[in-house]
Length: 107
Image 1 (tube, one colour):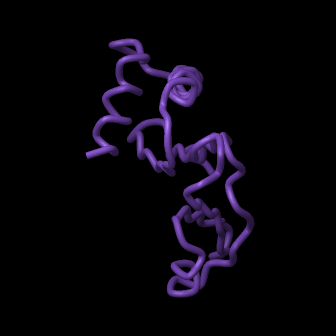
Image 2: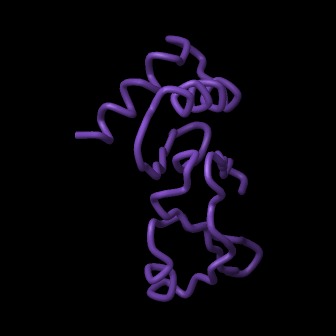
């Protein structure tokens, strides 16, 4: 599928060990230079957090939202804003075309 192709392309640009958030940023930047078409991607990287990006032309939607729960802010990223109301999330904004978001483990 196209998702698997994007993942393998990102992996091609990453170092084999000790990947950092900066490494992912660089890899995604390189992928955006060569990937054509419409895409929005959310990557969960266990020790670094969540990364989300969309194609440079902004064809595919990608939205970020949040909700407060006590002392914590929960972040949600989805392709459709309708998904936010189910969990009580408020829509913050659209992810901009070619924007890469990083939600670290500490928020």
